[in-house]
Length: 526
Image (cartoon, rainbow, N blue to C red; front, top):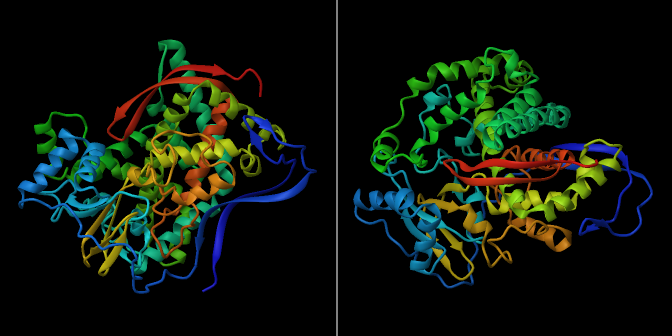
């Protein structure tokens, strides 16, 4: 089947500089010429992955260390270690050190009595972890949230795209619909991002002036939701019955789906009784979800028309649009944007000055406008975004069931996995693998600058695939992979067009990082 692609791209006349170092241009400018800079949103129609038998390994075969403990008792013990006694990072680190292996067996929460089988083979290094991307080896049916699955009552009675394996017939149609959404609305992305996040900055400035500090997360949630609604559906939520309640409703709805694998900081007994052992009743969120559904149904007529054309009911399409927009995209921006602001903020004024100079110079050389071409010239800015995605990926947990008997390799050994076994990867360990990255635990802003840096991009894995790969209908890589990279770049660009520097305070939150802005220094020149 011939391949077809869609991309965000801009064809403009630009004056290029050959490169940058320490915020200064290298060499003389090239003569103006017309260049097209693509940022692929998705690639569709490529051939399905190979289903060849696994190759023989040259590494020593080692029995997978670890065990699951006694029934009920073992899963409960691991759950308490994971959530309360150790926390996620120490939970995996301690077992990795105990077994002297990055591949081992353990129970993955939530366990009893929501998950029927919490047993999993854990993959924690940069070699074994990508096994989870290979759909010729692993099945992705109903494993999006791990060893349990939320009620489909929360998604209109449908198993939405994230829970489908590529082998299922509706996966192809639904992922093509997501590609269509991205392609048909791409011209609105940059202007609507500017509009929505200008509102965010104005909110932060007002709060900072009144209180001496400003909470980033709440303002970010509102800006992210408004941006997605305006860019993808041409609708301003404030002008509809939804009003400004979108982020609150979405956050509540998401909580009902992932509560069993979250810790909210409540007393242990209360969390165990309310989150771990019983499902929050979908009936409690039904009224709010109906408000959300009505907004999307009324705002997405052109996309629903396309869904009907390719054989998806308008109702099923609408529930999938809600999930893709609110859970996948809004959820990603809700988690990743504060993480990125934290990393850039902590890096200090030296990095801020370099980013501001690079970003403003590139925008000036492109007619004073933020374009795809301008952003392609921002080598340091692009590296900063990739480094933020590497060090704190927004979706750290990945799952898949072995489709057949497999041999999985780590750096030093190979392991035999039986058909049907659950595989689990905690991505921060894979993307902070010291055998892949120097200073792996550090945020290194220019890590991906230059040829050597670009070669490392294949080890950036946040999208359920490699950064050097493009999503297709035959895999489970994020359909909006390059859209996410684009909006993260836009956040950095808008930030440093407006400010010379900023200061923050950061603390852990149930969904990543809570950021408080303590200082914003407006740009002296642009």
